[in-house]
Image 1 (cartoon, rainbow, N blue to C red):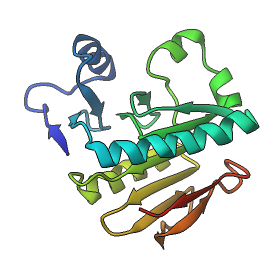
Image 2 (tube, helix red, strand yellow):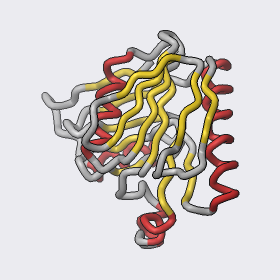
Image 3 (tube, one colour):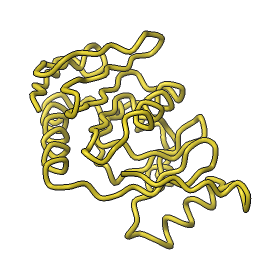
Length: 188
Protein backbone atom coordinates (compact mmCIF):
# COMPACT_ATOMS: atom_id res chain seq x y z
CA UNK A 1 0.00 0.00 0.00
CA UNK A 2 1.21 3.48 -0.80
CA UNK A 3 0.92 6.40 1.59
CA UNK A 4 0.51 9.82 -0.02
CA UNK A 5 1.76 12.82 1.93
CA UNK A 6 0.36 16.14 0.79
CA UNK A 7 2.99 18.68 1.78
CA UNK A 8 1.32 21.65 0.05
CA UNK A 9 0.50 23.41 3.33
CA UNK A 10 4.23 23.42 4.11
CA UNK A 11 5.94 23.34 0.72
CA UNK A 12 5.60 22.05 -2.81
CA UNK A 13 8.15 19.26 -3.06
CA UNK A 14 10.34 20.05 -6.06
CA UNK A 15 12.17 17.48 -8.14
CA UNK A 16 15.50 18.64 -6.68
CA UNK A 17 14.19 18.31 -3.12
CA UNK A 18 12.79 14.89 -3.96
CA UNK A 19 16.19 13.68 -5.19
CA UNK A 20 17.84 14.98 -2.03
CA UNK A 21 15.17 13.30 0.11
CA UNK A 22 15.76 9.96 -1.67
CA UNK A 23 19.53 10.28 -1.20
CA UNK A 24 19.09 11.03 2.51
CA UNK A 25 16.69 8.08 2.97
CA UNK A 26 17.95 5.25 0.72
CA UNK A 27 16.08 2.63 2.78
CA UNK A 28 12.71 4.09 1.72
CA UNK A 29 11.03 3.52 -1.62
CA UNK A 30 9.64 6.92 -2.56
CA UNK A 31 7.84 8.44 -5.52
CA UNK A 32 6.57 11.96 -6.27
CA UNK A 33 3.49 12.73 -8.33
CA UNK A 34 3.18 15.77 -10.64
CA UNK A 35 1.37 17.70 -7.88
CA UNK A 36 4.48 17.42 -5.70
CA UNK A 37 2.94 14.96 -3.24
CA UNK A 38 5.34 12.47 -1.68
CA UNK A 39 4.37 8.82 -2.06
CA UNK A 40 5.84 6.27 0.33
CA UNK A 41 5.69 2.80 -1.19
CA UNK A 42 5.28 -0.20 1.09
CA UNK A 43 7.34 -3.31 0.47
CA UNK A 44 5.47 -6.14 -1.27
CA UNK A 45 4.81 -9.61 0.09
CA UNK A 46 6.29 -12.84 -1.19
CA UNK A 47 3.59 -13.59 -3.78
CA UNK A 48 3.78 -10.13 -5.37
CA UNK A 49 7.58 -10.09 -5.23
CA UNK A 50 7.77 -13.47 -6.97
CA UNK A 51 5.34 -12.40 -9.71
CA UNK A 52 7.22 -9.12 -10.22
CA UNK A 53 10.52 -11.01 -10.47
CA UNK A 54 9.06 -13.39 -13.07
CA UNK A 55 7.80 -10.46 -15.15
CA UNK A 56 11.19 -8.74 -15.02
CA UNK A 57 12.82 -12.02 -16.05
CA UNK A 58 10.45 -12.42 -19.03
CA UNK A 59 11.17 -8.91 -20.29
CA UNK A 60 14.91 -9.23 -19.61
CA UNK A 61 15.15 -12.57 -21.44
CA UNK A 62 13.35 -11.13 -24.48
CA UNK A 63 15.63 -8.07 -24.35
CA UNK A 64 18.83 -10.15 -24.13
CA UNK A 65 17.77 -11.92 -27.30
CA UNK A 66 16.76 -8.79 -29.22
CA UNK A 67 19.13 -6.20 -27.70
CA UNK A 68 16.60 -3.47 -28.51
CA UNK A 69 16.71 -1.61 -25.22
CA UNK A 70 17.36 -1.56 -21.50
CA UNK A 71 15.25 -3.23 -18.78
CA UNK A 72 14.87 -1.67 -15.31
CA UNK A 73 13.73 -3.00 -11.95
CA UNK A 74 11.23 -1.44 -9.59
CA UNK A 75 14.07 0.33 -7.77
CA UNK A 76 14.63 2.69 -10.70
CA UNK A 77 13.01 6.11 -10.53
CA UNK A 78 12.27 7.94 -13.77
CA UNK A 79 11.85 11.73 -13.74
CA UNK A 80 8.88 11.92 -16.07
CA UNK A 81 8.45 14.83 -18.50
CA UNK A 82 5.03 15.68 -17.00
CA UNK A 83 6.55 16.30 -13.57
CA UNK A 84 6.30 13.07 -11.58
CA UNK A 85 9.13 10.87 -10.36
CA UNK A 86 7.96 7.28 -10.65
CA UNK A 87 9.28 3.74 -10.33
CA UNK A 88 7.32 1.14 -12.33
CA UNK A 89 7.50 -2.52 -11.31
CA UNK A 90 9.14 -3.30 -14.67
CA UNK A 91 10.30 -0.75 -17.23
CA UNK A 92 11.87 -0.91 -20.68
CA UNK A 93 13.50 1.93 -22.62
CA UNK A 94 14.54 1.69 -26.26
CA UNK A 95 18.28 1.67 -26.84
CA UNK A 96 18.04 4.83 -28.97
CA UNK A 97 16.26 6.77 -26.24
CA UNK A 98 18.71 5.53 -23.58
CA UNK A 99 21.77 6.39 -25.66
CA UNK A 100 20.49 9.95 -26.12
CA UNK A 101 20.91 10.55 -22.39
CA UNK A 102 24.12 11.92 -20.96
CA UNK A 103 26.10 9.84 -18.49
CA UNK A 104 24.98 12.16 -15.69
CA UNK A 105 21.32 11.64 -16.65
CA UNK A 106 21.81 7.86 -16.72
CA UNK A 107 23.50 7.89 -13.30
CA UNK A 108 20.66 9.84 -11.69
CA UNK A 109 16.91 9.47 -12.09
CA UNK A 110 16.69 9.29 -15.91
CA UNK A 111 14.69 12.28 -17.22
CA UNK A 112 12.59 10.20 -19.61
CA UNK A 113 9.45 8.12 -19.65
CA UNK A 114 9.96 4.42 -20.34
CA UNK A 115 8.55 3.16 -23.63
CA UNK A 116 6.98 0.19 -21.84
CA UNK A 117 6.00 -0.41 -18.20
CA UNK A 118 4.33 -3.05 -16.10
CA UNK A 119 2.54 -2.24 -12.87
CA UNK A 120 1.53 -5.26 -10.81
CA UNK A 121 -1.23 -4.66 -8.29
CA UNK A 122 -0.35 -6.20 -4.94
CA UNK A 123 -3.02 -7.23 -2.43
CA UNK A 124 -2.63 -3.98 -0.50
CA UNK A 125 -2.71 -1.68 -3.56
CA UNK A 126 -5.82 0.29 -4.42
CA UNK A 127 -6.68 0.15 -8.10
CA UNK A 128 -7.54 3.83 -8.73
CA UNK A 129 -4.05 5.21 -7.84
CA UNK A 130 -2.42 2.62 -10.10
CA UNK A 131 -4.74 3.60 -12.96
CA UNK A 132 -3.86 7.27 -12.38
CA UNK A 133 -0.17 6.34 -12.44
CA UNK A 134 -0.67 4.57 -15.79
CA UNK A 135 -2.38 7.69 -17.20
CA UNK A 136 0.55 9.74 -15.90
CA UNK A 137 2.94 7.49 -17.84
CA UNK A 138 0.83 7.91 -20.98
CA UNK A 139 0.82 11.70 -20.62
CA UNK A 140 4.62 11.54 -20.33
CA UNK A 141 5.09 9.51 -23.52
CA UNK A 142 4.55 5.85 -22.60
CA UNK A 143 3.90 3.74 -25.70
CA UNK A 144 2.61 0.53 -24.08
CA UNK A 145 1.77 -0.40 -20.50
CA UNK A 146 0.25 -3.32 -18.66
CA UNK A 147 -1.56 -2.92 -15.35
CA UNK A 148 -1.86 -6.47 -14.04
CA UNK A 149 -4.67 -6.89 -11.53
CA UNK A 150 -4.59 -10.42 -10.03
CA UNK A 151 -7.42 -9.59 -7.61
CA UNK A 152 -9.89 -9.14 -10.46
CA UNK A 153 -8.07 -11.53 -12.84
CA UNK A 154 -7.73 -8.76 -15.41
CA UNK A 155 -5.04 -6.83 -17.26
CA UNK A 156 -5.52 -3.25 -18.39
CA UNK A 157 -3.53 -2.45 -21.52
CA UNK A 158 -2.57 1.19 -22.03
CA UNK A 159 -1.54 2.56 -25.44
CA UNK A 160 -1.00 6.07 -26.79
CA UNK A 161 -4.18 7.71 -28.14
CA UNK A 162 -6.36 4.65 -27.46
CA UNK A 163 -8.94 3.60 -24.93
CA UNK A 164 -7.73 1.27 -22.22
CA UNK A 165 -8.27 -2.36 -23.23
CA UNK A 166 -9.23 -4.80 -20.48
CA UNK A 167 -8.52 -8.50 -20.96
CA UNK A 168 -9.31 -11.37 -18.61
CA UNK A 169 -6.73 -13.77 -17.27
CA UNK A 170 -5.35 -16.17 -18.20
CA UNK A 171 -4.08 -14.43 -21.30
CA UNK A 172 -1.01 -14.05 -23.44
CA UNK A 173 0.10 -10.42 -23.68
CA UNK A 174 1.99 -9.17 -26.71
CA UNK A 175 4.71 -6.57 -26.84
CA UNK A 176 3.06 -5.48 -30.09
CA UNK A 177 5.29 -3.29 -32.26
CA UNK A 178 6.96 -1.74 -29.18
CA UNK A 179 8.61 -4.99 -28.01
CA UNK A 180 8.32 -7.08 -31.21
CA UNK A 181 8.14 -10.81 -30.69
CA UNK A 182 7.46 -10.57 -26.94
CA UNK A 183 4.64 -12.78 -25.66
CA UNK A 184 4.04 -13.24 -21.95
CA UNK A 185 1.57 -15.66 -20.36
CA UNK A 186 -0.31 -14.04 -17.48
CA UNK A 187 -2.26 -16.59 -15.45
CA UNK A 188 -2.30 -15.34 -11.85
